[in-house]
Length: 390
Image (cartoon, rainbow, N blue to C red; front, side, top):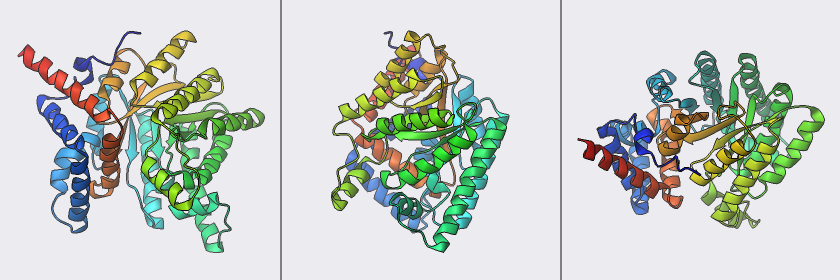
């Protein structure tokens, strides 16, 4: 197959020389694992001590990986990417909140992004995290089938109501809605809730999308069981397929609690799991829709090959490719150049509140073999190409 992901001129067409240099500098830093650990600790300390570091963070790592501090802030980035055919998913990336008023604020912001998506072709999806709308502990307790106190039940009812209002609004406005995956020990409760939303709002097509983290070895079986339920009850399945983002936490908790790790035995096993799940969904596109969230070139090529083999048009709305803003531009922009549906996750929120997300991105780039070196190599090629042209 033609290698379409090596064209750095297309990949970095929107980056100025200065932005290219900044990206190279950032990934050079991220490539150094001890530096990431020290930088993370120092940044957390500086933010907790209310030292004036937000300007520095904003000018470096924040602006590379985030669209802005508000949804309006993001629009210039959204419009710029769309000139190259790359859509956006506005992702309010505030994490780790515990208060009802914070959950209500996340609800209001998510509803606003649904409205944004309704009004703009460049924003085809809305998104939220389950723990953006309710306490992690509640999901965990429900997943473990522990009885709730009356107060906790009332709290959970509010979580369900928030989910339902967002899904209902997305359905009414015909906006596809991605619901992110999180740690395995809270995911069962989230999965059951999202399935209920699919039952209600995916009667005619996939509006509500759950997420399968395919570094978990049990997820394809989960999808097959869900498919049987969907066939029986008559609803469509929407799924975002990712490899996963919580591997170290998953291994650590499994070891501490003495249960088998939910994570595949190797990177190769995860890749096989991802590609087999993708193939299964492609075989059932009559009742499924896919958001292929991947930074893996081989998996992306496999989707392209399956689409060709099945005679599926490049812009079929049931298949989207997705990458994170600030990463894998060689995949996103080259796919868009060739006519495929592509959307970048565009995180936004106050600098201080988005730091957990940014730290996870840095750690992920450090731990995923080859990810950072690939970014660096592509940036270096483009820098040299531009230099040669001058």
